[in-house]
Length: 167
Image (cartoon, rainbow, N blue to C red; front, side, top):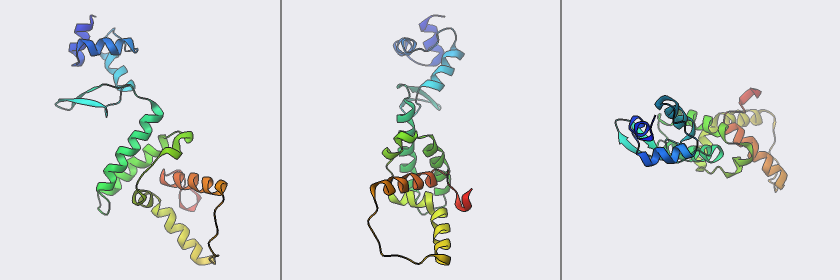
């Protein structure tokens, strides 16, 4: 199959087909090339071709892709704060947070209101439990190691990896 035929079948330019072939896209068939593109290109970095077709133009970098997805989903969720439409955003955001590699999780930045919404169930369970048995102590400074552990804990809560009741 020629690059011209492949490009026409994928609705991309011949130059783009050539660039993608150089990056590893198979040129044996349109189906193989389309599968490779779905698996290796980020549709969020695409120009619209209309009729729900897009031309992905950048290769995915898994860690960066997960971070950028979290950022996009958090921005979408922020627009729906305080509305019933927020819940579907939170489900997708939890899934995206779980995809962020452990060594990159400290790079996730979202508005506090989004973190609060993601952690609301566990926060409420902790508050209810504390009300039954805990007497508040004067506030003390948190050590750096404790701060890191708390950050990892609340990230896992936001990602849905830690659930109320130890689930």
